[in-house]
Structure formats: C-alpha cells, structure tokens
Amino acid sequence: MVIKAMLNPRHLAAPLWLAAWRAGRALFPEPAGSFRILLFHDVPKAERPAFAQLVQSLADAGRLITPAQAEARLNSAAPKGQGRPPCLISFDDGFASNLEVAETILAPLGAKALFFVCPGLTDLSGQAQADSIAANVFDGKRGANDLTILGWDGVERLMALGHSIGSHTLSHKRLTALSPDQCAEQIEGAAQAFQARLGAVPEWFAYTFGDVGSINPPSLAAIAARHRFCRSGVRGLNVPGMSPLALRADHVDLAAPPAWRQVAVEGGLDPLYRKARAALDGMARGL
Image (cartoon, rainbow, N blue to C red; front, side, top):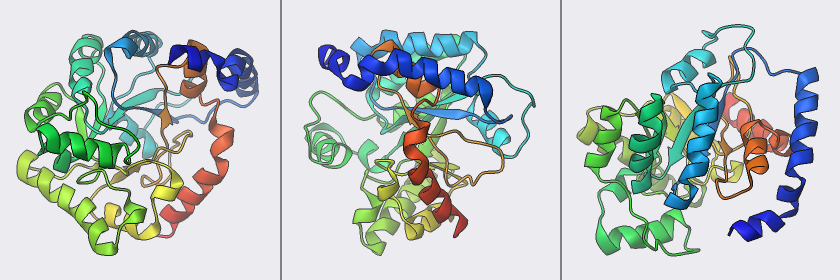
C-alpha cells in the first residue's frame, strides 16, 4: 500500500503543491474564527505512528479544539486575529480501533474528538456485524476482514473520556438511495436508539459516505429536525456564521506520504471542492 501511495502522481507532487498552497495562503489568510474538521475512520496499528505524529504536531502548535469550541466558533464566539485555523478531530463508523486510539494517543494529550457511530451496527456482533460492515460501510466492495464495531460499552467509555458522540445513521445506509420511509428509519431510528441507550439524542450528525451526492434536501431537513450540526465529507474550511448543517471535513489518508497528509490538513485540496461546497450550502439555505 505504501509503495502504491508513493507512486501516486498527486503524492509525488505533494511537496510542490504544499509550498504553492502555503505561499497563496500567506497572501490570503483564512478568516478569523475559522476551523477545520479532520476526518478519520479505522486507524490500524501500522498507521498509528502517523496519526500520533499528526495529533502531536497540532497539539504543540495549539491547534486542537474540542467539539464545544468548534460550536462556539460557528456562533462567532471565537478569538479574533488567529493564526493557522485549529482542527477538530472526528472519526466515522465507530470502529473498535477508535477507542484504542482515544486511550493511547488522544488521552495523553488531553485531546477531545467527535466519534460518529451507527447504533444499528453497534447492536450487532459476530458474523452479522461483519456482513453489515461489508454491505453497508464498504458498500459491498470488500469484506470486513478483522474489523469490528465498538459495542455500547466502548461508546460509553469514549464518553467517559470526555469525547462527543454523533449519529452516523442507524446502519450506515446511503440516504439518497433510500425511500422516504427508509431514510426516516435511518435518521429517526438512530436518534431513538441513542435516546434509549445514552439518554439523549446527539447534537451532531454525519451523513454516510460524505460526498454531496449522498445527501439531498429532504434528508437534510430530517437531520435538522433532530440534530443541530451536520458534518459532510466535503473538503473545506468552516467559518463563523455558516450553516451548521453544511459543515465540511478533510479526510486525511494516514497511509499516504507525510507531505500529502499535510496538504489535506492545511486545506490544499479545497479548490477541487468548490462546486460541492456550493451545492451543499444551497441545500442548507433552502431549509
């Protein structure tokens, strides 16, 4: 996997790409109060040194924020005249590795993150869970292999560590591929499961797959009825005053070379997602 990553043309161009992006940003700095949400999924043991290095570098630079601090920034309650935008760390799908990373990497730094889980997968175990991971999380493109989803005890352990839990639909279905009743089951059913088990409906929601084609106005309206914030997988900067239902996130490929990871963290891929951000903003404005 590492060899293939090194041969990727974009990865090879990453150092020059990063230098050019930084030069442009020096002329046009990011708005005060802005922040990024970094997106991760499973973090296998081979990729944990890269993750630890990334989180440590952000912590050393004072660039890690909590979910509550991110929420405050959206409401313009943030310090002015900031330097580089801080980052909120988030994880999708609720893989068992998330808890291991939270305990061994995030906890020593006092870092707090957002973990989006699917209660319908959390309720499963054994082969039933493996089949659902393969069919829903990986969209039938691969098997679960040795991956497992956290049980409720693991979710509650994350909360005890001070992290925030968000909804990621009931069983990781693509909302735009569902009927209205099925879509309602994925959003409302998840909300009810969280209420029953954790005593509250999460304020945060992240729709599955994250691209702009995986969300539509009816689904976004249903999400808004139960949640304050909706995070996509569309890359970009989050700024004060924007719709809390059109939040952006930057996926960081931990298996990629360091320069390419830094391109993602610093927003160097933002220009490629202008149309997607505009479409997402349009949906949110229409609610």
